[in-house]
Length: 164
Image 1: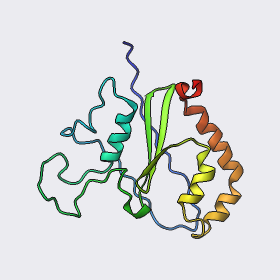
Image 2: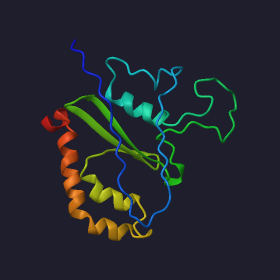
Image 3: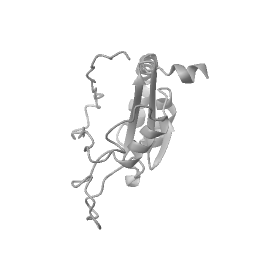
């Protein structure tokens, strides 16, 4: 078996229109080791394993992994299956190797396989386009968005799917 070199992931936050004056919060965490269902990826994991792990827990409660009968309602783990009244949007990247990368979009308790071109159709259905200048911003930046989609498609490679 070849060892792959360790790679650091880069997180890019898109620029917001200047009129917005609130801060975004981004949570990054490593699953607690007590739960094999989401912490340790099996060597021969099926593609469904990744979807299940995302649905089970993306943000653990404060006592994650401990068996507590009747945990407080406000201390619940959040998984992608939780709709959170439409306030939870998760992009789950399943990277098995550089030529096998899948992205799933979880929103409102549902999941779909996500392709970059979906941004043009899905984002206006998910985001409130009447809020502030969302529709205007979306319309004015179509060409820029299409360029970003093209770049995203170049790095989001799934040779298995392309052959199918």
